[in-house]
Length: 419
Image (cartoon, rainbow, N blue to C red):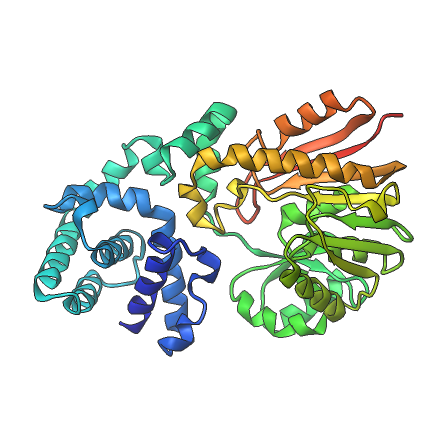
């Protein structure tokens, strides 16, 4: 029951308190003194409910005698939890789900206990019917996204939209960036194998680890790898940083692309890492130290404006702009319900950052602009508009990485001065 109480508090923090999924559980595992297996169950329930909230509410509206908006928020989240477990967690007995949910509801009042128990037991009886209703519902309900978000993707990707939406439910392996300053992909894979972990060598720079990644984290302090998604690694590879380069990273935190470029440079050259949030810069410095990298200098700067000290000095510029995160919904399910109208202001910020960032380039330099979003207004359309209005630059290459199992959706563009 502690695992479910912990999950309920985390879900309330996200759904009703506006917290981010990745920090919603912060401190709660310790508060509820959860054993490792209970932590795992709690995490699965939290992520699952956040992923399926629209679909779950669609079914709850068929089960509840009262409109969902009139229900106590904790009761509604508890019902979402129970329904998610009944529908999607085959290993948990349905009677246990109903009983424990009812026991938790009792602390909200005797009538609420009876209501929760009745709704969930009715859901058990109607499980096949309700799952079929989700399958036949409008696509935004079936894939549990806001109607505006699904419509945006459908307008841009047509028949591919369902493939994209389905991919957000798929759990992939964890990708690691191998640190060549300390080891090789082969040696790191062998070390994980000796620990009983299943991994795959993707390239000299990348390996992926399957289940039980927490065990691999025991080695993170040795500095032989950095946890970094495949798409993010692809952006660093596109940059092509090499020994002796001067690199500027304009929106650096948490620093994955910064340290990735330093690895490609064999820790020889100069990297200047900016971020608007000064309190986040020590994270880059800490990771660099752990990885044996000493060529990174951090600095607080709002990259919508130009940092005059670095005009025309960079061989390479990393411009990983703040974005909607629509490509990373698989990891951050709260983005499913993002207010699309807010994106217009975000696009203006991205445009300002790109326009400022190109001013750091030498005439022979290149900039890689990237966003972890598949929204073309933040990627393809924005870059096309930039090239149109800045004739001295040319688009060298661009790539939209669609989300797939274990891979975030990403847009990557490489831009340089026109020859």
